[in-house]
Structures are given as structure tokens and as C-alpha cells.
Amino acid sequence: MTIVRFEKGEAYSIRLDNLVALLRAIQRLENISEIIPEVPRSLYDTRDELTNKRVRRKKNEK
Image (cartoon, rainbow, N blue to C red; front, side):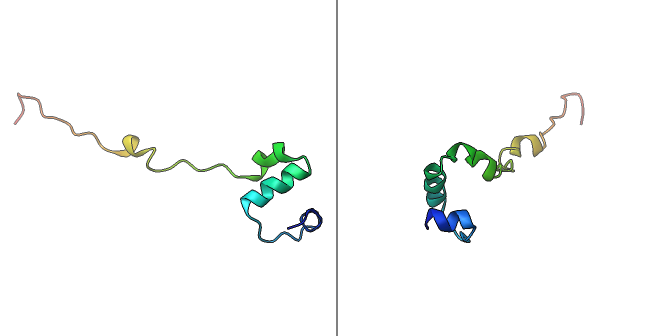
């Protein structure tokens, strides 16, 4: 991947390490956060919020 092909928009398939190197070469590495999307919150992170808590019966109830 050359910078010329990258600037022309001919970069159809590019690896992340090549993208970082190209952005560094054209001094735009600080803008990488605008390109990469935010990772959605995992369901494993919300597992505690979603699980039902067991409710104990009181000693008086049968």
C-alpha cells in the first residue's frame, strides 16, 4: 500500500497496522479516533444487572 494509492482512495482492503503507518506518514494519526467506531457495551458487562435475585421467604411464611 502506497501513500499515493491511499490518498486516491484505492485502498479497498487495508490492515490496521498499515492504516496507522499511513496516518502517521501524513501526520493525521491524532484523527484515528474519528475513524474507528466505538465498541458497543457487552452483554457480559450487564449480566449482573439482568439476572434476577433470589428472594428468600421470611421465616413466618410457608
